[in-house]
Structure formats: C-alpha cells, structure tokens
Image (cartoon, rainbow, N blue to C red; front, side, top):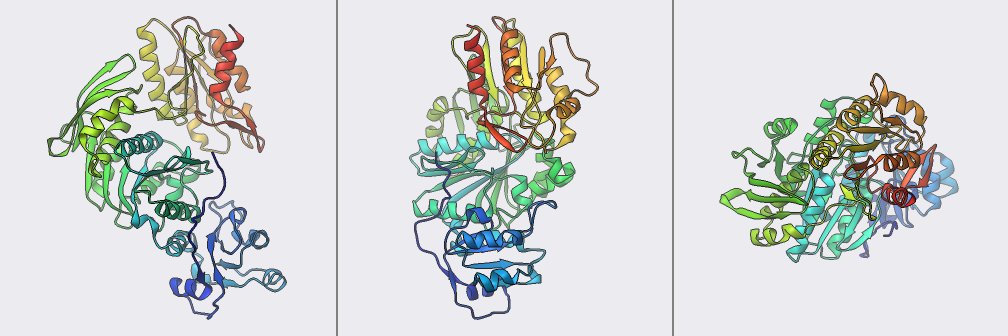
Length: 510
C-alpha cells in the first residue's frame, strides 16, 4: 500500500490570469503558469498553486503561515484571502493573488478551483457518495465488490484508503482534502475507471472538500451521536449530512428510512429519492425474507419494478443487512444485472476490522470491530451477546474513547459497554493529547461496575485481561480501533493493531 500523493499523469496547466478570471477577480494579466493545486504545504509538488486558506477549525492555523514552506516545496504562486509577507513575494519571487472577497468563501472555492483545474473529472465517472454515521465503509466496499463482479473497472475512496482498480494507497482522511480528491478522481478518469464509491464525511461537507464533485447517486445510511466536538449539536451534524442531498452535488438519492433522521431527510432532499428499509414494504427496496444462519443470513431482497434477489449473505450483525441492502439497490440502479448480484452475495467479503474474527485455535470466539460511537457499540454488543448467550457463553468486551474528540459521548459509550456485555473492560483508545486516565474517568462516571468488570489504562494489558478471563464458549470483542495499526499517545503514534494484540494474547496463554 502506497502513501505517495496521487497525481494524474496527464499534463495540466493554467495561468494566474486564468484563475483570476475563473474567480471573477480583477485580472492582473499575469500569465505565469501552474501545473497543480494544493492547500497543504506538505503536499505541494513543484509547479503548484498554493491556496493559503483559513484553517479547517477555529483553532487551526491559517494557511498563510505555511506559504514559505509551500514555496520551498515548489509552489510557484499563492492564492490567499490575506496579505502575505513581502519576504515571500520579494525574496522568493512568488506572485500572490490576494483578495478580501474570498475571505468567507475561499474554503469552498478550493474544491471548485481544483475541479476546474482538472476539468471536472467527476462528471466523467459514475460517482456514488455515501454518508452517515455508521456503515459508510461497509456499504462502499460491498458496492465495489458488486461492480467488480460485473466486470467493471472501479475505484473506492474512504476510511481504509484509496483503491484505484486494485492499486491501494493509504489515506489520512475518510474524504481527502479538496485538491487531493480532485487529483485522485482525475487519475481514475485517466485510467478509465468506470465507477467510484466514495465515503463522504460530515467534516468534508462543512469544510467544502467535496465542492466541485458531481455524484450520480448520494446515499444516507443513518445518523447517531458522533463528532459533536466539531459540529456542536446533532442538528448541525444532520444539516451537514443533508447538504449533500441537493442539486448542487447529485442527480438522485438513496435513503434508509428505518433511521429517524433518514425519514426526516426524505422530506428535505431536493433530488429524486429511492427509499430502502429492512422491514417497511412501502419502501422501494426491502427484505422480503431474512433467516439467520450460523455464519450469516439467507435473504430475499425485493426491489423496484418487483425485482427479487435471493441468496446467502456471509456477514454477521443485523446492521450489515442495511449496508448490503443499500449496496444492492445502488448497484441495480447503475445497471448491474440482479442475477449477477444474486450469484455474488455468497462471495462477498467483510471489511477489514469490522466484526473481524481472530482465530488461532482458541476455544472461544475472538472479534475486533471499529465501533466507536454509542450507537455502533450498542449494535455490535447486542449482536454478539445474543449469539454468545445462545451457546451458553459470556460476552467480554474491551472499549476506550479517543482523545481530542467528542467528550459528550464518553459516558454514553461507557454505559453502553457496561450494559451490553457480561464483562466490561474499560481502557485507552487513542488518547492523543489528553490524559488517558481522565478519559476513563469520564467513561465510567456514575457507573456501578459489575464484579468482573475492570478499568485498565494500558490497552495491551486490557486485551490480555479479557483473554485471560475468557472460558470455552465465551466471546471476546475488542472495540474502537478496528483496522487501525497505530495508537496515538501524546502526539506520538506507536505501532498497535488490535487484531495482532488479540492473537498474541491468546497465544501467550496456550
């Protein structure tokens, strides 16, 4: 997996005068040309226009603080809403386009400028944007698998990184920053990729990262408490998601109406909507039959025009029924034959770090999952507890909360852990700049701990404790980090993979 910045091979070039005309600014007739666009000084490549914009959050530094670094990395021109030191313009000889007119809109315009520079690449690809609190990654991954089974060249952008028709690149954001996003989409167009499944985060919508994108379909999975450190209120969080369901971004929408916010969004969307539901037969897509089996579900999906798709779905967790239903509906809407979908269902693979089994020969079940919101924790624990109790075992769960993130969800997640498991072990997640013990105090505040439950600040020790507690027939689940391979403590990211740690803890007791 590569982490190198993705840029198209084709040659692109615009002048300062071109960008001034595009933005409707007074023209300077400066014909100096740039060959790329970046808003991150670290991502600048030689020949780029560097956009020095306000930071993504109120506490973030303004891009003007990084102009010198950008120029040293090869930027040949700067666009900003504030004046830049004459040291840059005179000493380094780089032209700066400055206009107060951009002060309130330059963040949005980064995406528009990047899309314009790369000639609107999203309009040449059938793009699907998926948003919601939970399920984005699984839905996008399943959708891509269905496209692949149909013989299409496909791409994916999301939490797990970027997939260019089988070429994988790591990513730093669920939705890349606007210039990087447009460069990736243009690279896909250049490689004749036909379909793109893309996770769209609420942060990206507020920060204008997807401005300039055009989606064939946008989809809404669900909404529950998360990211309130950024949005402040659930209403703000919802409105951020809802902004995607407009003519500005998309042609049509798919919405899960089993979710309260989904039903509300149905009335707000300004584009045609296809509805889906696990049980409501008035929806355009629903399950006519769901039968639980040992390693998944036998299902019958009823869709528009009476289409019926039947097969075995090898996924655990009822929430995955929602994710698969959405992927199936979108794939059909984009022309995948229902017969291809039906034959593909048994071959679908789960997403790394989502209800991922760890098996090294132990006599109990061991699972890792990315659940890191109150709703996702509750759903995962409910699923695993039911199956574990059916075989007479106990559910032992390990969970922490991340630092520098929404503090209001910590006591809610703590209660969900305690009430949803038989043995709850509270531990660290990614403390980041916060004190891990203080985070744990917030998680456990007001809780009456069960006899075998524990608080262990060291995540490795907490996983070992859970394994040592397990007996035949039990389930151990480690929640929160899923596919992540590092743990951030005091600004340093240390190697840490829950799947590896869980396997090693089991091996150590054999």
